[in-house]
Image 1 (cartoon, rainbow, N blue to C red):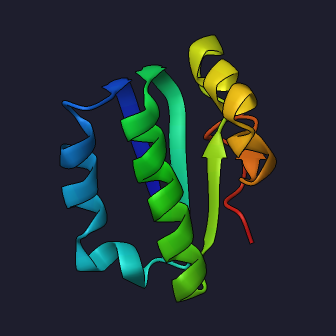
Image 2 (cartoon, helix red, strand yellow; image 1 turned 90 degrees about the vertical axis):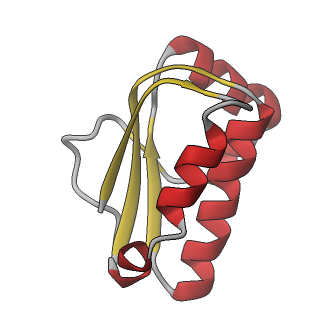
Image 3 (cartoon, helix red, strand yellow; image 1 turned 90 degrees about the horizontal axis):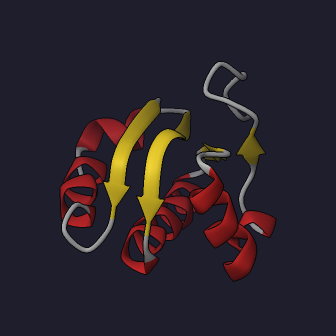
Length: 98
């Protein structure tokens, strides 16, 4: 399952993503990819939602990955070292994680 995020993932929009992640269909997917190619901005709240999704995917035995995203997204992943813990695909056209 590919979730394409666009615009900003922050305090205002993170609850919307969280509601989507709470849907039963997410748990049925063998793999989850967060496509961040169109995401222009992410703050700590958005990062927390992504990390929570990663943790839940691990608990369910699902593969999990994200795409690189914008320069701002990449910078936050680098500064927080989150990028070292997540599988990062070059783009959403890459194969789903196994």
